[in-house]
Image 1 (cartoon, one colour):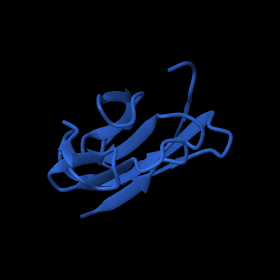
Image 2 (tube, rainbow, N blue to C red; image 1 turned 60 degrees about the horizontal axis):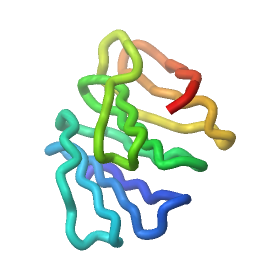
Image 3 (tube, rainbow, N blue to C red; image 1 turned 60 degrees about the vertical axis):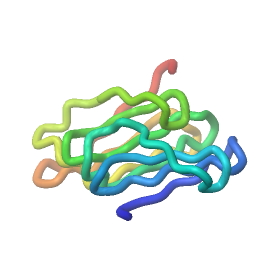
Length: 111
């Protein structure tokens, strides 16, 4: 296992990022469902105020508007290998640390 995140707004909802992709659970870990995201997830975080989730993978930065059910790449990050992700406390921005390229910021507008 590489990373784990719990939702602040949805009790019992967990996301786990691994070298096999992302797995999600809506009932505290029983069962785990594959969330269909590219493998080698370095970091996963949940939005502090919504059901959005963000994943930093070897293939780039991804966003899920529905707590990990579906994913979409949201940022061009140069080398693509996103090793760190953080969401702002107010939920308006997400930051991505990209190996060899620096820090990227995405301003979140809408869902």
